[in-house]
Amino acid sequence: MHKKTKILISLVVLLCGFIIYAIPFIKMEFAESAHYTEKDTREYSFYTPEILQEMPRISQKYEFSFINVSGPASHVNVVKFYGTMDSTKVDEYLLNKGFKKQDKCDIEATCWRGSDPQETVYVNTPPGENMVIVQVVNDFS
Image (cartoon, rainbow, N blue to C red; front, side, top):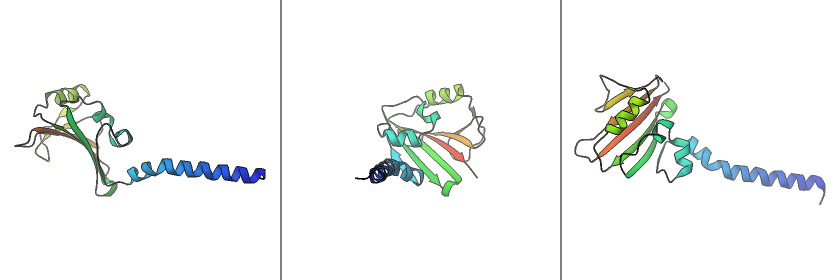
């Protein structure tokens, strides 16, 4: 084979390998929603903001979600802790991170704000449910 042909074949193989590697990330970038656990390492690393990655795990059973609301206008990252209604450790964690509890909240939850004006953290224990839901909402509008 000619040297140019070998180089061309090598480049095509490398390009195909890159595309195969990148396709899952491209799909995640344009996803409207995702449900995953910490064991789904690619999704966990891609979707989960640092605040949720470092948050204390207040129960043994928990799962994550990502929701892209109204196009790219806001992103909602959620962790649901099952089998508990005690959010004390989450509240302490948010205080230590510099978040301040808000007097008013636009949903039935406890609202927290930090230094980022686009980010709001909601902590909720739904009535009749044995779970704590933590939502991190980033509003880009």
